[in-house]
Image (cartoon, rainbow, N blue to C red; front, side):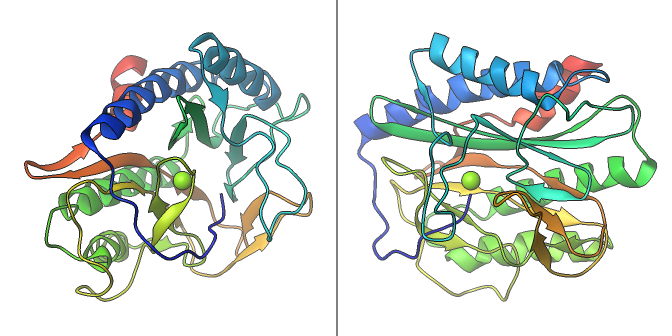
Amino acid sequence: MSILNAERIILKTERELEVLEENARLLADILVEVALAAVPGVSTGELDRLAERLIRQAGAEPAFKGFQDELHPRPYPATLCASLNQEVVHGLPGPDRVLREGDLLSLDLGLVRKGYCADAAVTVEVGEVSPEGRRLVEVAWGALQAGVAQARIGQRVSDISHAIGAYVRKRGFFVIRELVGHGIGRKLHEPPQIPNFGPPGRGPRLQEGMVLCLEPMIQTKDGPIRAGGDGWTVVTASGGLAAHCEEMVAITPDGPRVLTGWIQEEIWRRRK
Ligand code: MG
């Protein structure tokens, strides 16, 4: 989802962190279940309904449904963002969008519970995908891990950005430059914005109590993004494939704590 420009980074208390972690765990379990249901012949509309049902069963509400901001004056109509192949983010699910063998499907999902948000994304290989597609997901995942490794007290926000960007560039792929990671709490998008490229050593210092969504969005070809025409879907202008992984990370004295618990890895483990 897009980002509002805002000011202050909101530090979370221990109690708030507990709720954020509960929510992150619930979201991770739901996202794994939705990802495992993404097989050839299933529509993204069906995945959307499954995601909404699981979120409500958990006593939570979808975070994206009805979302709007100055860039998106029309409320987001679904629970799930389901972006296929050259779609980067905010793919609108629908009954006519039926998954086919070889599709690369990124699933971005958010929920709200007890007044706090959770937000995460994975990219799912539908059946057997091309070697390039598989590698793209692995690099998005590796880039996320490289970013998390920088999520330590005393580092700066752009140390995360730099780690992600350098990891992707070294492996011959390209980050999406227009979209960023973000803080999260009572609001889905809080400061700081976290680009996926740039020089290290810039921006606010990371402090205990920050909770950040790190989310590399990467593509096989270099270039900008463009609007897909339905008011929400964002696609690569080059027509290259895109992948997206996102986890919630708390900055703690013991180092980065991945509140969502490495969802992409869990999906690979469960699919074997
Ligand atoms: Mg996000």
